[in-house]
Amino acid sequence: MAADELGEFERIGRFFAPLAGPGGLGLLDDAALVDCKAGCCLVVTADTIVAGVHYLPEDPPEFVARKLLRVNLSDLAAMGARPLHYVLTTALPAELGPEWLARFAQGLAEDQRRFGIDLIGGDSVSTPGPAVLSLTAIGEIAAGREIRRSGARPGDLVWVSGTIGDAFLGLRILRGTYRDLTAERSNYLIRRFQVPDPRTELGPFLSGLAHAMIDVSDGLLADLGHICETSQVAAVVALDQLPLSPAAQVIADGDPGLRPRLAAAGDDYELLFTAPVEATEAVAELSSRLNIPITPIGKIEPGVGVRLVDADGRTISSEHTGYRHF
Image (cartoon, rainbow, N blue to C red):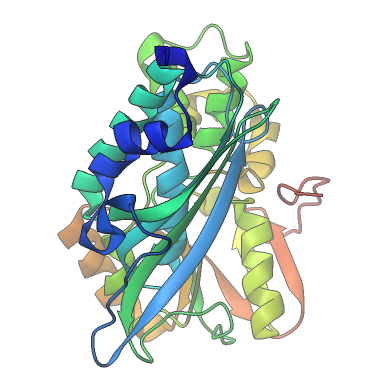
């Protein structure tokens, strides 16, 4: 059999079996075994990314793999869970041969070591295209300690980790915009799009502090809207409080109308949460200890919906509120 004609089981054996943890049984059986400690719950999430929709077909395969894993780890972090295992399904066109798969598996291996997670199973099929990659991540949390979207209360402050809008700007750069930006700043924003940084360390520490939490995937305003809808509350967000990276700040300074768009931009995979005012000191201490910026950007109030306001408290209308899947 030629190298570019590997069958399903040859692919699994060569590229994915080396990634399997003990529960994966060498990927030789029909299913995996997953332990659950006494007093803990398993937290399960799944995400799918499609070439040309969630990543560019020319993106390096190792970056595609890391993005696929990391967007799922971000969902686990948003519930305060610690990652354990994952299940992988690939539907790949024939032109993505062994070299692409080897680099893809290498990216997974790097992040498995970084985040302490292992592969326990999945499926591998062919498709005429585009490539479709699906991953199910399994995490663990003490029973009753999970952070849901439904706990936000009037009076809570709204916080967000890291910076907002970088991935949106990185994709724009890949599509030919902001050509006068320095290479260093361009590369930073592109990497934020291609390889997000899930807050797996921060999430578990927010258990007991945050009333409600979500990760920023569809856009800050849209995702905060999910919290508000589920919690049956409203929120107000101060546009001038949104944290921007130095690279994004340079672009925004040259385009004052860009900030509301960044508030609606997706793919940041930062943690967005609400917490009571009395938790402010604890959140600040956590930010310092983990060296992760955590910024208060608004508050929860009675009512419905999310309002974006300027420095004078005036509502800013925007046609963009976030990414729509359908």
